[in-house]
Image (tube, rainbow, N blue to C red; front, side):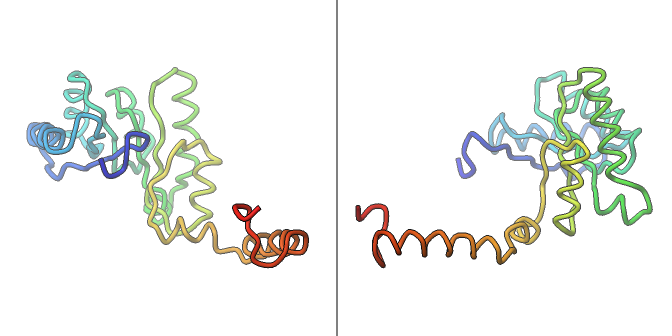
Length: 178
């Protein structure tokens, strides 16, 4: 109810055991609703849980993805979203954008019904590079999202337009005043 029906809520399990992950997923759905995407880490036990949950028709986000083979396993298990950890992958010396690009190509090539939900960001450039590499969605801290609009040219463009408006219609004359 809080986020509306046009957005998706992704809630992560905390267990490391398949059976416990499945039980937690059922509890999450019971407490919230059946539209929730249950976040399951892509581990050996997690892949088993993803298969079980998808067989039950439950929405699943495969999370904690650091490696392309993990992503491929999540695809094969039927995940709806796959969440590679962009900043963390980069910190380990690998290229997260290559992973996203190769995963995106595999999704298209084999016609999987899955989207890439890139996660773990420290800056706007990582978000941009994720989208440019094939991610369809992101989850990012509010500080990173707000940084997108930290450009003084945006406010200057609005001020310039308003100045033109007021020069024609008069100071303090808004659209609703006409």
